[in-house]
Image (tube, rainbow, N blue to C red):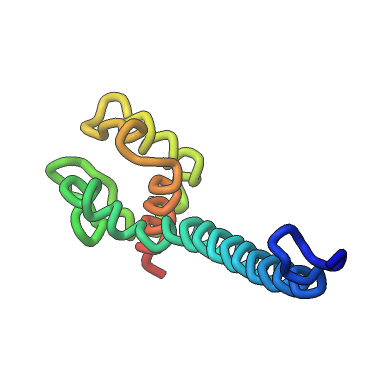
Length: 130
């Protein structure tokens, strides 16, 4: 029986089994890669969706739940078109990360990820009145 493997199973049968196993393994690998790519895409999209949550959990106590600020605390009105036009995203990121000297604005660079800061900036921009 020269056409048989070590266990006596004919070579053509062994080849079919290997193709089936390889096909199944390849399919599992492709599905796994698809799930990984999908999860990375989902995670990349998530921060933009959580800007409001980041704001409510970290900013609302001084800037108000509606972003209008408090005169007594001298916090800006994020809904004001004038204020929105007076600051760039880069400046806003710097203030959020490092705080603002001479004010009560604390640094959040060690508390918020870059993604959270990007999300909260996007949320603050969305508060602008037209």
